[in-house]
Image 1 (cartoon, rainbow, N blue to C red):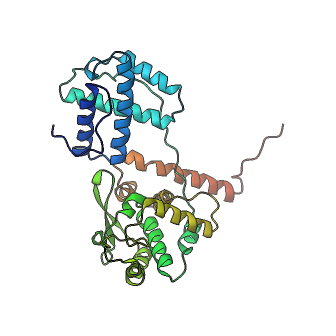
Image 2: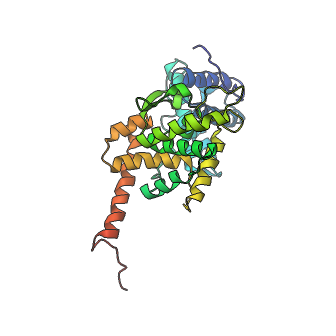
Image 3: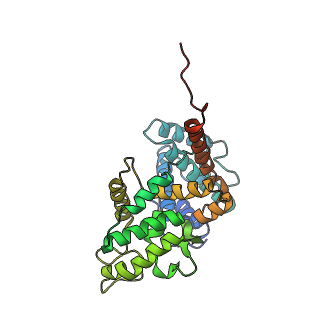
Length: 317
């Protein structure tokens, strides 16, 4: 397999490193996984290889299930979250399947490996009223407020990830036809609608605010910082937090909360789950289905609040 560009080479000992590097290249070139996922997998595999080397294992071809079970047992005694442990096992299983596929091993050495079950947490959302207050928070006419209003409107209107919004270029936006072309995880392209209010906010930003941020070396980035470059994810996170506080929303508000709210409010309004999946850029429908739990929870809460016999009362002792 041809080696692709990598963030770094494996720091694993001896013969372990070459297989790890090749597997990470496979994830980049053929699977299109994000740099964040690839870096995490490489770190996990390096850690496992170092553990195995200390126990006399020389390469992946001689790894047995007992060594892996010991590794997982040792990890479980440390302060790793369930999600972190699940990712380490996923990285190891992916490598094992890759070695079988490439003919390096005849068996999957992780076949009997077990680990903690990863349960999906129901995502938090903003209420429609909270969204209205947040979007109205940057109400001034100065370039910063106009820019921030356009950003917030687009986040909520199209359900973009913060990294997707930070990387948007002018040519990806088509306001006349009402859509934005997005490159999501693994550089997968999708087309997402942009609602009417977001289009109005974006037009206002492009005409009256963006020129104020343009500097001699400014490129075609859509949303600009004070220095004329693209806004960073950290800057966007702080901006959302600032306007949430200004809007009087007491709980923690992160950019991803607008993505969750986008999906939940669409579902509550009757949108098809597969359409929401496509707009969010989820590879599997099961990922999108988590929002049905949010909608069910909202219905139960409303029933308990408004139905005359919906409230739960404490039993008398």
